[in-house]
Image 1 (tube, rainbow over the protein chains, first blue to last red):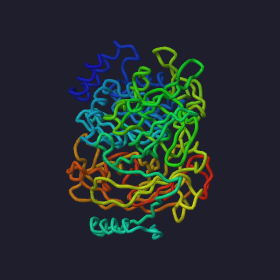
Image 2 (image 1 turned 90 degrees about the horizontal axis):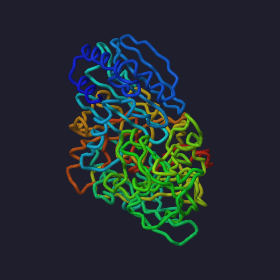
Image 3 (image 1 turned 180 degrees about the vertical axis):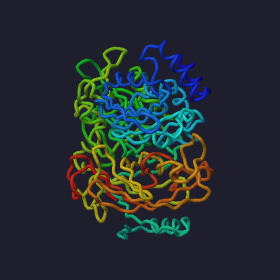
Image 4 (image 1 turned 60 degrees about the vertical axis):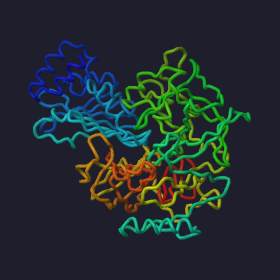
Length: 164
Length: 397
């Protein structure tokens, strides 16, 4: 199922992709699909997983669902009018469960991080900019922040730098 | 900014080279580097044990089975002011250290960093660095064989740093702002616990509440003397070089060789950050970190500096960029930092070079990595410890 979602996200148009997710999502239990690329219902899945409180803020072209976890990590999920989570951002003392947050994009992210070394060892922030996935993670133990989005899924009028 | 006290011939000639290399855009920095004292240990920037580390700062650390003279000196341990605690690869350890046990079984830890996580058992060691020592310090042994890696660890999304190749060092010596690696949050039970410490009664490890004193400790905070912080003292370096030597000095204002002098104190928030302003924008999650290997800040679209490639993580301007930013502490102290960012691909061209004073890349906010330390004595004061510059945590330079 994860593979199917990822194919849809990568190749389907924005509107078509949104409809396809809505259809697929109904057939899946809540815990299977995660936030990025999922539908609005996955926000509730994440809320349950993080035992977080939730508040929602409407912006011009999308809605931001802000999850505040008891560990002090704040996660923001950016949902388009069509109901697709096109971006996530987080900040707090530690890194949240990115397997949950990045969902079908998690493996792609893991692979990209492992190949990011230029033949030179060193410790630095993560900056993944693939055509179908952008992820940045920075900070240090006791203070991490990051964001991820799928460029194709950005709603009309939304800017990538708003996902923070 | 510039200190002219007790300088050495070596330092003077190094700075003369800097002036030529920089094209005179910013004045070279000259700092005094302590060379003797029981609180001084030699440090070096070089390629490290795997021979491929860019801007890696290394030191030797001796660990002993507690209360014995059964010891091992482990070279090439990365000096990291961005974390707290000693972590050593089990694959390089020949000395056997006792396992820490909780009420339900042996204790292990997963600590996330940016480039990877460290997983492995918590053990206890007597530690010596230079002439300083600490007894019965909880440390982490890094390996995936004593206990299997839990999903909570792999879910951070970064690779395991359980080998020399993955870590690029024999271990990490975290001498940062905090006395423990995690702190009060890891001592909590229930959903407020961030889930870094585990107890492993069987082949399955489960998240546990870990009391503060049992957590992996900043060894400096447990030294008998000179235990309120560290100073990293490295000479200036502009052009790429094979190595750079300096001193790690323990204590702040505890000896004749570790006074604050004219350094400005920048206090930090609860997360260990201060604010860096760049072109009129304030970035409040900025920090100084000897364990980051470059200047990492903002992104290409904000700075106008091109990335080297889609996934490289470094900047590649066509010519060296001379930039300026302002750091501000929680105490209101502020100061301008001039820094330069060169083309990473050009810098890396010579495989024999490992010191890069102008290495930079994209990040978020400002991560003042090791190049920031070149030509500057940088003080890191530990939380709750008193110093002549006030109580830690703070940075001073």
